[in-house]
Length: 445
Ligand SMILES: *[C@@H]1O[C@H](CO)[C@@H](O)[C@H](O)[C@H]1NC(C)=O
Ligand SMILES: *[C@@H]1O[C@H](CO)[C@@H](O)[C@H](O)[C@H]1NC(C)=O
Ligand SMILES: *[C@@H]1O[C@H](CO)[C@@H](O)[C@H](O)[C@H]1NC(C)=O
Ligand SMILES: *[C@@H]1O[C@H](CO)[C@@H](O)[C@H](O)[C@H]1NC(C)=O
Ligand SMILES: *[C@@H]1O[C@H](CO)[C@@H](O)[C@H](O)[C@H]1NC(C)=O
Ligand SMILES: *[C@@H]1O[C@H](CO)[C@@H](O)[C@H](O)[C@H]1NC(C)=O
Ligand SMILES: *[C@@H]1O[C@H](CO)[C@@H](O)[C@H](O)[C@H]1NC(C)=O
Ligand SMILES: *[C@@H]1O[C@H](CO)[C@@H](O)[C@H](O)[C@H]1NC(C)=O
Image (cartoon, rainbow, N blue to C red; front, side):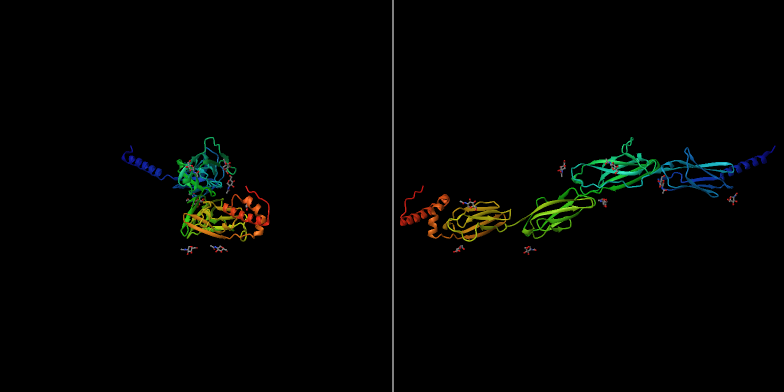
């Protein structure tokens, strides 16, 4: 009936309808998968293209109820502004439009997270090698909490990895937002000497792989100086030579180091960095030094004794009394040194006696005689040399009369230590005098 023309018309209609399909209106909602932080604002834009008439937009939440957005419509665009996103906004939002009777809708899948702050590590007073202590790292206001992971590091070495358990033992609900929470990772840490000087850090990672979220926040522990290492525990230096001692302290912030010389009044600063340098060592530089390490968190000190090697100090020789001793007096000669490195000897010139390796040597002569007079030598000796001091002792003879009266008293207690010759001599003189004064017998045993 209608023939070829008819078929052509039908085809034409068909083509037309295909073209109309093609030029059908478009609807776009952006962003389609926003990943957004709690507390921030989100704007969804729903845009119509190729619709010949004005349309109205309808916003709704899929499955959930949703309030709180502000809608702003223009001819072809509608904007939904959600201020101050909360965990409640973890929803799908639909934008719906009808153009010439044909409906269309697009969905935006909102993923909310919260991870606003670096982990918090309380200050640690000090960390001492081999001493275990508990460290605590807390992340606040996290959502979703089950996706947080805490890693403890020393330098770049992982010490411990921690994650909230299903039961959320350590979880404390936060007051400010409904669903954000905090988590504390407690770690028993035993510092090793090898790790001294490296930062201790707590690294928190919030990862939701499905939506491509991975956020990391890091904090370093602040701690006071604990272990102090000194390069030499028994430093010694020869006179005139050079000595360098290093003091290192573990701590964050890096402790400042001061070297003090003790035993001076007041103590003197010898170095304001970790190196104590003694150039051209002299005896006065020997003694105790102190390394003070301190930072904002705390302080520690360590002492070290520096020994200066060289000939000994000149020793001191003293007589127990002032002036020349008189015959028969009880005298003591003292040989001493303030230098611990030296051995001491005390002897009469040309008649060695005394003791070695003592800080002080005493020679007691309970009843001194003329023949005890002479030069006494106090000698200090070590591996590097010998120093001496001498004293010239002259024993005053007593006038005869005084001697006489004293004799029995003087001889008897002293007999043991006075030479036989002296006793004999005195006895002879005594007897002669007795004979002259016509006295009676005396028996000596
Ligand atoms: C759409 O609305 C605007 C004003 O809101 C009006 O000026 C315009 O003529 C309308 N267009 C159509 C196609 O109705
Ligand atoms: C965001 O909302 C929370 C509670 O829902 C509120 O405590 C906070 O003050 C709000 N922040 C802003 C910037 O409005
Ligand atoms: C710490 O322990 C290790 C091994 O137990 C030991 O070798 C080291 O001397 C200790 N260090 C200190 C400072 O106590
Ligand atoms: C760890 O620190 C948090 C926050 O300061 C505190 O609430 C928690 O009690 C601490 N945990 C331990 C075991 O000290
Ligand atoms: C250790 O941490 C402090 C901050 O706490 C930082 O200034 C310093 O650079 C860190 N040191 C190293 C070696 O990373
Ligand atoms: C080393 O010290 C001694 C004594 O103080 C001094 O006489 C000498 O000149 C010094 N030598 C140098 C190289 O400074
Ligand atoms: C001599 O004096 C010393 C102290 O100066 C005393 O210890 C000692 O006993 C005295 N010896 C005699 C015999 O009196
Ligand atoms: C010790 O003193 C006496 C008297 O003062 C003196 O005669 C003698 O020469 C002195 N000896 C020495 C070695 O100086």
